[in-house]
Amino acid sequence: MIFKRIHIIFFILFVSLSQVYAGKTIRILISKPADKIELTGEFSLYSDSKMIQQLKDITIPVSFSENMITLFKSASYPSVFLKKTGEGYFKIGDYKYDGELKIISRDKKMYLVNYLDVEEYIQGVLPNEISPKWHIEVIKAQTVAARTFAYFYIEKNKGEIYDLTDNTYAQVYKGTINEDPVFNEAIVKTAGEVLVFKNELIQSFFHSVCGGHTENAGKVWGKNLPYLKGIPCNYCSTAKYYRWEETFSEEEILQKLKAHGFDLENIRSFSPAIRSGSGRWVKVKISGSKKSVLIPGNKFRLIMGIEKIRSTKFTVRRNKNGKGFVFSGKGWGHGVGLCQWGAKKMAEKGYKYYRILRYYYRGTELLKMNSSNKRSVNSERSAVKKHKF
Ligand SMILES: [Zn+2]
Image 1 (cartoon, rainbow, N blue to C red):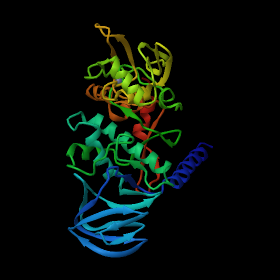
Image 2: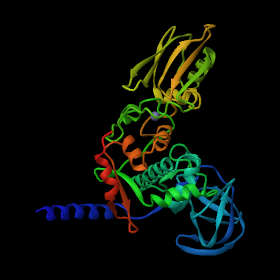
Image 3: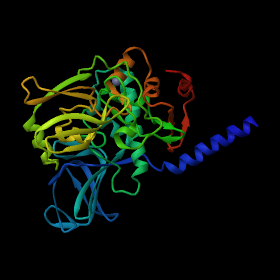
Image 4: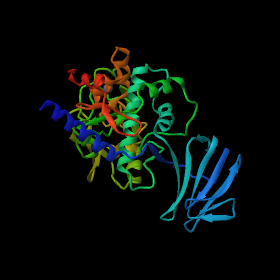
């Protein structure tokens, strides 16, 4: 009976996963516009699966009009694919890229999409998301979170022309640059490892500093996820932005609000119309002399500048001169999922990366995807799930 049950579990695990995960190539949208592509090494140029020409160490001028991509100011195509045929890379702007490049015309726009292996992509993500000087266990935790994030969107965006953008809307990716040996070590030691909840890949959100308590995903994006619940974090209190303060003049605030369609006169007060359990302002109420406005906390951050209002966990008081407002806050980022500065402290205290991940992503398991993209429970590490925090 026990054997039968195990057999069924393994059958479900492998059959469902092998169906879900078809490939390890990720497609990243290069968001900066480009008017040229510099090739180093040998490439083949394809259009509609047909090889057009071989190219070597050359700069290709690129332009776009009327749904056609024009290369070398002469030949035009609806889409082209640059495939490496040996060692080499391509360069767009200041960034060098491994893998291949597809240039696609869609809805009167040109899309530059970098096709590459997920593990190579993570090499390009890590330097933008974490310092190589941090403890190896927190770098490994970040690596697994970044890989899980990538696989989640490979699956979610299957029908789209790209999986993820290269900017802060997803994970920052500036091509494959200066591969740091520490990052390579973290990638190799966690090769293929991803986080799942009930056998499904999780949305492994992370942020810089939670300010003492992480946030429920539902309070930020409106949809609750069981593994993204707000939890206390006693590990990030030494982070630079655990506490922050910013002062704005009333005029500056009114101008910023007006630019986003909120027309107010004379601000009387700020108050949290809805406050989450962790103290974040889910909705900000701003009362003026004639009317009040309600703005979602995240939108308020965007209006005021996310580099200034670093989180929605803040209080507001009038400036001493009475002419402006002082925002005193805690944490940096949306507060959902892994707190990077908290994870750093946990690693320094001796926690292994899988325990750090399990702390911030409750109820999840670490699984390893094998070369054919099936996954299996990592028995040594999954035993950690019994650990109670
Ligand atoms: Zn924290």
